[in-house]
Image (cartoon, rainbow, N blue to C red; front, side, top):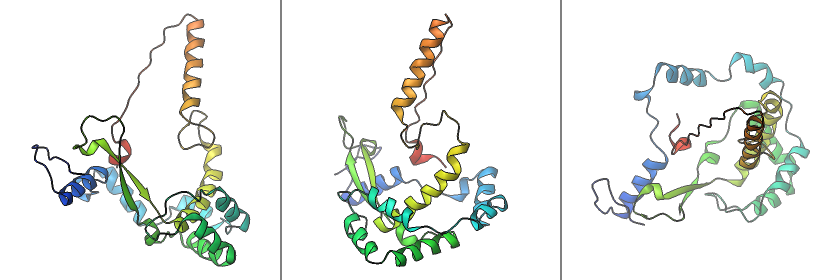
Amino acid sequence: MLLRSAAGETLTPDQSAELLAKTFYPDDSVTTDTAYHKQVREAVDCGIPADLQDLSDNDPPFTTAELEMVLSSQNPKKAPGPDGLTSDICAAAINCNKEVFLALANKCLSLSYFPKQWKVTHVCILRKPAKEDYTHPKSYRPIGLLSILGKTVEKMLIGRLQWRLFPRLHRSQYGFMPHRGTEDALYDLIGHIREEIRLKKIVLLVSLDIEGAFDNAW
C-alpha cells in the first residue's frame, strides 16, 4: 500500500510504513508530560504501591485448573505471534509438562514481571471497509499478533484481576466485562428513555465519539 503525505505527495513503501507506525503508535515523550504525568511515571518506576503490596504478597500461585481453563478457551485458528507458534502447538507443548510452564508463570507472578519478548508484536495492517480514500492512514487499522505463550500467562493474570476488581465496579460498566457489551448498554439506555417518557419527563442524550481514543490516550 502506498499512502500520501499531508502535502499530497505519494510516499514510498518505507515512508508509508513509517507514517502508519506514527499514526497508530504515537511517541510517548516525557517532554510533553504534565505534572500529573510525571507523578504517574514516578509511581510506576517505584514498583508496586504500598497499598497494593499486601495483595501482591498474598496472591497464591497459579493452579493447574487456571491454566487448563485458559488453554481450553483459546482458539486454534487464531494467527500466531512473532514466534510462529499457534495455540494448538503451544497447548500441546504445555500439556507435555504443565508444571514447567506453571513454574514460569508463577515466577512472573511472584516477581511482578512480564518478559519483554512476550510484548513484541507482529502488526498486520487491515483496510477499514467502505472507505473512499485508501491513501490515508486513517483508512486502516492495526492488528497486533502477540506470542500465544505470553497471552496464556496474560489471561491467567486477567482472571486474577477480574476476581479482585469486578465486585468493586459500577453496574453501569459495560466495556471489557464478560457477557456484557454494546447491546446491553443500548438496551438499558432505551429502557431508561422509555421510563422517563412514560413519566412525561424531558430526555436529553449527549453522545461523544473520540477518534483514535485508544491510540492517543496517555
